[in-house]
Length: 125
Picture 1 (cartoon, rainbow, N blue to C red):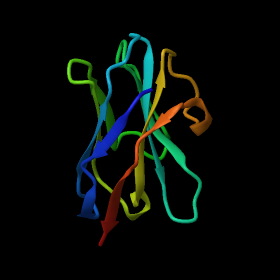
Picture 2: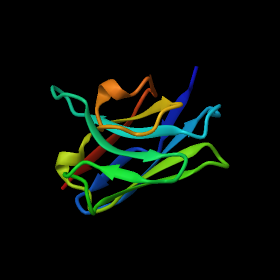
Picture 3: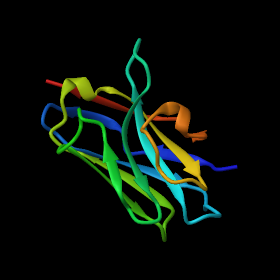
C-alpha cells in the first residue's frame, strides 16, 4: 500500500507560481513512476507530468510544457511540481499518483495505482 499526501496548493494571480509537494510512503522498488494529474469541475482528470524515481526522467503534457517542472528527492520520498506563469486554465484540483514497481508509461489515469486526496490550485486575474 502506497500513501500519497499533496500540499502546496493555493490561490494566485495570473502569471504567478506555486510549488506542489507530494510526500510518498517509501517505495520497495527503485523503479517507480510518480505523476501529477489535475481535474477541473465538470472535466476529466488529465495528466500533467510524471517522473521516474530511478533516473528522474520527466514527461509533460503539452499544455504545461515549458511552464511546469517536475522533480523528485528520493532521500525525502518527495516529488515536486513547480508551476510557473500560471493561467486561469490551470485552475483545478491537483492529484499526485504512483505506479510502484513499474517504469513510467503513457501519462494516463489508468496507468497509476495509488492516489492522494488532492490540493486545490486557483488562478485568477
